[in-house]
Image (cartoon, rainbow over all chains, first blue to last red; front, top):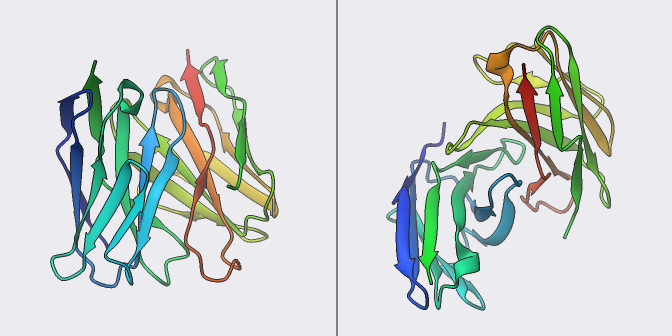
Amino acid sequence: GENVEQHPSTLSVQEGDSAVIKCTYSDSASNYFPWYKQELGKGPQLIIDIRSNVGEKKDQRIAVTLNKTAKHFSLHITETQPEDSAVYFCAASLPGTGNQFYFGTGTSLTVIP
Amino acid sequence: GAVVSQHPSRVICKSGTSVKIECRSLDFQATTMFWYRQFPKKSLMLMATSNEGSKATYEQGVEKDKFLINHASLTLSTLTVTSAHPEDSSFYICSATDLTSGGLNEQFFGPGTRLTVL
């Protein structure tokens, strides 16, 4: 099956700086890569996603890049704000698995005011 | 985006009792629902996948007789924790997807249910 690794596990940045979280996956057939933000005591919320036919996607301060050759994808948050503090999870999805997700281990992001 | 609700959001029960958690897709038909369990500061652990009208598929190590899953309609799936014990205390999260929606892959997550077994 698919194996997703996520780094770093914790990340602290100063407000206004950028944050980058990286994930690698093992199965080259994976074709969908979402990123979720989870606040304490709440369910995950989709913040951005990318499909295997695209190399980069941007939505305001958030961007995701995908390198299919190296099998890794990254989340980039620019101009970080305290409200960006949360746990972020990456995931990968394989075709033919009924939309099953393989999650990374999560990154706890703290934005210091 | 699509909305998924869970009820209850929190439940406290005595050891030995059963607890039912509901997961509803509010504005779309969910052909498939997933149930996850999450321990503090850990990732989501997939427990089972349920397709409407058929038996759930459980992940290795998850007791199907302990965690009963029913997906009787395209908008509702339930997870029943039978004879709950303190070690079942956890955060349970459902997600829903529509496999007929033109090949899109998204899963829409509910807000989670915090179960505490005394």
